[in-house]
Length: 159
Image (tube, rainbow, N blue to C red):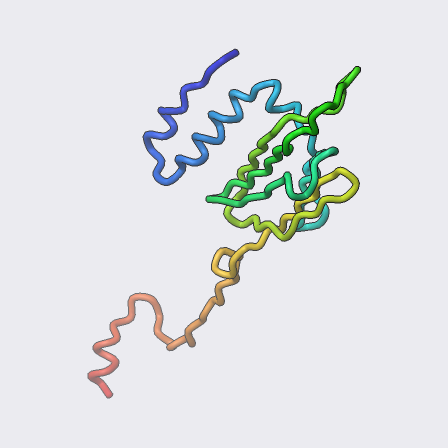
């Protein structure tokens, strides 16, 4: 696998440390981290998104959805398994997980729902009024009747 040195790019930037971390993390995903639990990211509207994660077998009390410093962390931990259970085949994963999603500053978490073994986390992009594009009015000044190069002092002294 190739590694990229981003330090030449970071020498001339200020405040973009998070971008460097994101690129570094994206370059090193593990197979296990990509596989469990499976999830979808959908765009459900102009400024609306939804993360859907398959969490079959998890109760709502065993799941946590946390937003901290621009990172959405979804984790699941099963409680203790009942004693005396013997499995002939165990195909349903019962392992703990933690999945992290880095969100832009304008993305807000609306809600989360567990429905039919799927955890839905709804997100919306809210652009603050100060960051929205705005049109600047062009002010015109009335013409004074002067021509280019005309001496205004001579005109005012004659009056």
